[in-house]
Length: 309
Image (cartoon, rainbow, N blue to C red; front, side):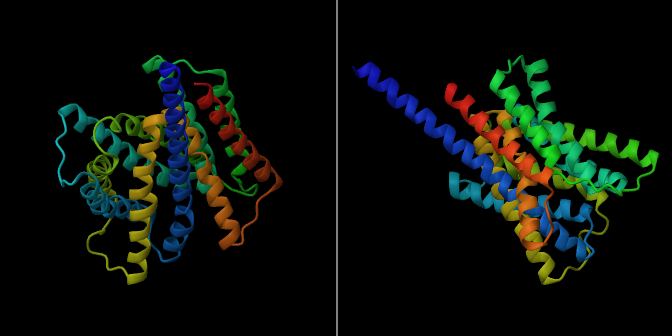
């Protein structure tokens, strides 16, 4: 009787941890979805994406260090050489996927860049997991992955009147594919970093390195004078959809795994679309609504897969 009771308690605790992990991932993706509104405001104020990306990472570091100090009671946590390599990969992949995303936008625009990079990222995660980590994909995972990617593709509204030269189209698509690859590396390294130390400290070390990588691409970031309004927007981006979302994402990916986390992150464009409808008076096509529905079905499939485990 005691053995059976212990198994039931363990199963209930495992199920509760899975639900908490999924909640953390979906909350992180929701926070990322608010970036679009803020980035548009900063764009209107003539702040280019290079500087936004730099300050996003640089300003998130003190927030993450303070959070880590409150969580662990220490400003510095000992890490091994292997752990440092993981954290450098985490920060480097974050910085490089932001950089390639910006470069892709310059060539083919936001819609095409989002469509290619966000849809391909979870596929790259799955391929890397199977090829290099010898993971086996269950049928429900494959179904969820397919529905999530298809839903995202339908959700992203690509303008039909977009004029792109053949040269820019090829270059932009290649950059977007590379961006997706760096996103996949970010997800995988986030999962690896969850075994290293608490997510706040790993984020602080990683994003400090990422900011250094972006510094050469951000002209005059340290000398340009910003208005208080711009600093408030940058502080929001650094603290909420970067520091807090990073902490939630690493917390969730530790339990759910890279593929589940990649699928959960697909709701970011859905949240961005909903916020654009509410605050920027943008519209969503009927294909977008179908895509949103498929995304939700994808997440439900992942919940069934988790419950089956």
